[in-house]
Length: 473
Image 1 (cartoon, rainbow, N blue to C red):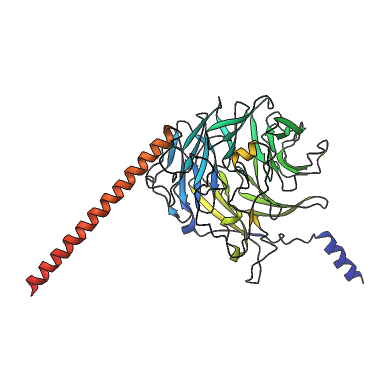
Image 2 (cartoon, rainbow, N blue to C red):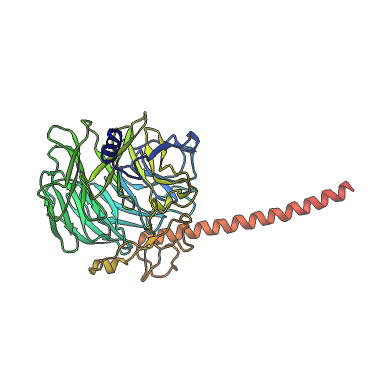
């Protein structure tokens, strides 16, 4: 009886979760990206962004700012002469892939500008210096870039001028400018699941939930974390806000908040006394939050539930090398056949190492519980719809047969769109577009002339072979 009672109590204490045994594993050396000069800028962003096609890494660059864009298959040693995206005149601070087009990426820089780039289908062959569009509106460096999760061509930026700007990228216009809400530097800005609200963490130790279209603060919490070091705040899929920061005694903390009642947190956890800023990465499908500390050599993960204590520690993945930054792959880029639930791209001093997180399962069948339908690449709204006040939840796709990109991966447009480089060369929208079209024409002409040259050489070879055969006879 005593044994049965002990087992019963043990089962009650050890919470059942399918993510308790998440297993982290680095890939083999030949599947890493080597000899990369990772940026040394003192800014607490991830320095890395990944999607199902490319990995982008902010690097050290003399005389300006640059980042690498590598096809995922381009592993091994990266040559120093490998082409970069290098249009900024100051160091790049943040990059973000467009969720609705895997070839479009935005970058923010110390030069106060945001640039939006279209990467060729198979990656870069030459350096990319001309962005599709330059967004000018910040008076100080731009440290935060974030695409809208469900509306096409809507981009948020936050700068050290304490402003948040929401852009319509298809016209290059600043549509919303939030000027007087933040008295100090903004540490983080995050959209909610359908992009109707944003939450920000500011140097004044206040977390704010903002309705950007009404330009009003919906909820705020002063001294969410009392320590002086930077905080982070992200939305969860249920609308709650998850934050990381530091206590008055400089212990790292994480907390969970309900925006409808922010007087007291739902849950607070003290972690350790390390001074690296905790970057949170959230999976809305599994409700797991991964915390990657800058300068740490570990990734901690937690499951968020509606049972006390609400934030449940799962496990820690540890390596020897500290991380300078971290990229996080969207669900569309994971291998469902290997029960992979997350993949990180860990930046070391001169290397990017993919780390695969799996849930061990014996069955080869598709695991429905690990892979509910996830946000796909199709936007729910056009930019003008969102700015007019409409909302749309993410359009979900099934991962049952592995994600297969649709045939048409170019941007669909209702009106002329400067991101659509396949649009006809009528109605140019700006100098950046014209330059891009001229370059494209030059490349196509060069390809045509090379084909003609190869064809003429082939004919010449055939003639010479015929002559040789006659001599041999």
